[in-house]
Structures are given as structure tokens and as C-alpha cells.
Length: 288
Length: 175
Image (cartoon, rainbow over all chains, first blue to last red; front, side, top):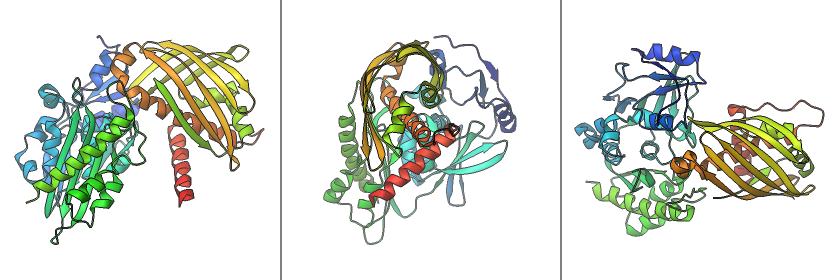
């Protein structure tokens, strides 16, 4: 449980961090909350030659509202998101998702940016971020770019971030009107990771029909995905019990599911359907 | 653990077969393969520096090709170990012609042990699928090269681009 030798840098500014990273993009890793990277290093499954700790960089930890968007700094901890009163009012999916992550220690140290950049196939945030159609702001010494949540997760533990880029901010359009949200997951009993996790954000129009739907699913495949067929079946219909069940039945359509010692691929697909149905029903029930 | 899958390659079967039995092609296609040396008839020694995301390791091992039936089938037997753990297994590869292209079907059984298996169990199957996809995408590019031309270059972005264009082609074909 002792990591291999590595160099350590704790820059005070993001610019410094970016220039360090630009010098050694192939063997340096950014350290955020360290709740995925450090365990992997202690097991020597990850052996970065340089660790760039961005914990001392100011102004990467915040929850702001700007131009109709919620903007979250990458170093905002799960606990800060879980305990934000304002988010509970305007986008309750975020605190709900945060509260389901790991345990208290993990939530106190782990960050939303670290979790997203690590892209664990069973992490909770990717499902929420996809369902909310978030934008992710990546920055490097070459400049800044915005990546859509759908394009961000490339494969298992692999994101669209380039080796010299750091995730700086997450932007979410504040849901308006009659919106209900829910995150439901099957907790892995040992790790707390999602065996399957389904995030739903659903908006009803004046006629009681669903005008917008976002459904993100994690834990099933090598990366979190948008359940586009479920969304398609919901939009334009009245989300009663029957519609919800038939929409949710498409939760794992065309998905190459993964199996492990705890849950087979078929079982994960089954859970995706059941939890999609429950999460949609819960989101609908929350609409005032 | 069972690993199986199917990949459709837009290259004639003869070319795919040649690529699959050419150690220099295999070395270029296997993600992270630093060394693939012939040690005997259809036997090779390999060094792999490979991984997924931040999780990386170096593996040393042997590869043996058996039950060769040109150009439709062989069995591959691998045995390797490295700092993160060990793996051992065998699998069958079958090549089938379809519409001028080639369908490669693989099915195998692999035992993984050590740290990798005890803490990474939930990710092993996904990682295997991901690496298989990278391998076959690179292999397809190799098989499409005319004989005598220089081999294609592989890298993460090139491989990703090829994978995306292949996917788009499949989607359009379906409609």
C-alpha cells in the first residue's frame, strides 16, 4: 500500500498547473480530491511520475448562477453540492446525486471535477451530468473549450480531455417550469459505486405532457450513456404509469452491458429498466 | 471470465488473415505492445505496456497460435504476468466473409489474478472490450493497406476517428 516514487507539485494558480502539465502531459496526473487516484497509486495500478495537486489553486470550488446557468467549479466537493440549499431549490438532482456517493469521507474530499475526469464506469456524476445536458469547460495552456456531456465520456476511464487539459467548470442550464428530477441507484454493498444508476430530469408543459426529458444511465456499460429512446418515448406523452413503464423498457436497448462477479450483464440490463421506471415515476411525483 | 465479441472489418478476408498472423502487424495493433518476438513456430514473447486511463501496467508474457486453418480460424493461447497481476487464457478467432468484408468472431476464457483482479474485477470485462475494439480498428486499417505501401499510423486519435467513421458507416447502412 505504498505508491511508487513520484514528483509532487502544488501550484498556487491554474496557469502554473497548466504549464507543468504541458511540459509532461504523458506522465503527469492532476490530483483533485484524490479518492480514486490515490488508492490506484497505492495499489500501484497507477504510477504517474508527477502529481500536480490543484487543491491550492484558488477559485476552483464554487456554485454560482450566471446567465440562467448553474456554474460549478471542478474542485467543488460532493459534500458542498449535497448541502447546497440553493441547488436543492433550482436543481435538486445535483444534491441528490451527491448524497448517494460513497461515504462521508469520500464526499468530504472527493470532487465533482475529479470524478468526471476519472470517468469511472460506475461513478454517479456522469449519469446526472448527461441527463442535465451539461457543458464541461476544459482549459489548457492553449486556451479554453467547451465539451458537451454527450461527447465528454469516450470510454471506460477515458474522456475527451486531452493530456494537457484540465476540467475547470461544469455548466448546467437551470431547469425551468414544472421540472421534476430523481437519481436512483443500486449501491454496490462494498464500494458504494452504482451497480446501476439512473438520473432523470423531466419537464411538463402546460398541457401536462412531457416537454423535455433527460435520462442518463451509469454502471451498465463501459461508460455512462444517454437513454435516448427512453427520452424519445417520454417527450410529447403524458407520463402515467403505463407510458413510464413502456418508455423505461428501452433503458438498455442496444447497450453492450458489462458483467462482473457481482452482477451479470443481463442482470444489469434488467436493473436499468427497473430503475429507469422508478426514477421517472419519482421525478414525475416531485413535480409541483 | 468469458470474453466474446464480433467485429466487422471492411477488408477482404485474405488480407485480414495475413494481418492476423504477421507479428509486426500484430505488434502495431495490440494496444501498448512494445515487443513481440518470435520464439518458435507460431510462438511469440511479448511485452505490453498498456492500460486504461490512469490505470497502467507492464506485462510480460507468451503468445501461441494453434489449430491454424487458413484463412478462417486459429486459437490463441496467452499467458502473462506483470506488476498489477497475471492473466492466462485461450480464445478462438473465426473469420467469415461478408459483402466483400470480413466478420471476425472471437470467444475466449481468461483468468485474471493478483491486485488487478481483486480490486479491478468490475472493470476487467469493459477494459477487455475496449482494447479489443482498439485492436480490431487498427487491424482493419492495416488490412486495408495495399501490399507494398507503408503501414498506417496508429494513435489514440487516429484509432478513435476510425472507430467513429466505422460506426457512422454502420448506422447509415442500417437506414
